[in-house]
Length: 214
Image (cartoon, rainbow, N blue to C red; front, side, top):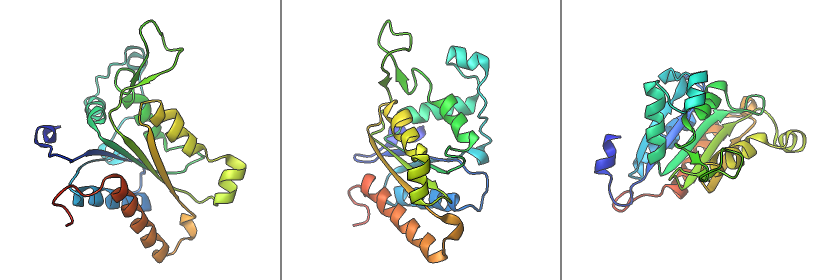
């Protein structure tokens, strides 16, 4: 968080979280496109490859009960996410869910008093009060399921998960998402167009600050 003291007017701090084990995956290419665009527009990209960092997704009984972690990587992520002006999540659709490492990141990082709280006297049965300062949450997913089947058979669970169960719960009210499909059958030109679309979306939500890109 050393950048905090040097942040410039209009500059945003964007936490970018990648959950994919394969270093040559298309998800990794998406992450690079996001980071490059955020930085080219003059903002601060705080990028985390959870597998590359060796993030431990397993929450202990003690951590669950106390909301206090002794894992320095978890506490570093918590401090960063509290300061983020935007959050970008990148992961594949596995069984209608994020990979386990990313679910564990949510379990361990977005804890009570970090990402949300409750009113005085409310032990947790009432409505949450979001604490995150981030104004926007973006999600990029890859899938090998067609749009029609995803929506008619499965109901697009990832959209509901990230938009309603996580971001809105934690106070992040502006949400957008791009699902890239069908990746297994995609051509190089399709993948290149997707990356261009991703850069455009990032530019819409984290536009160039004064003096950047003209």
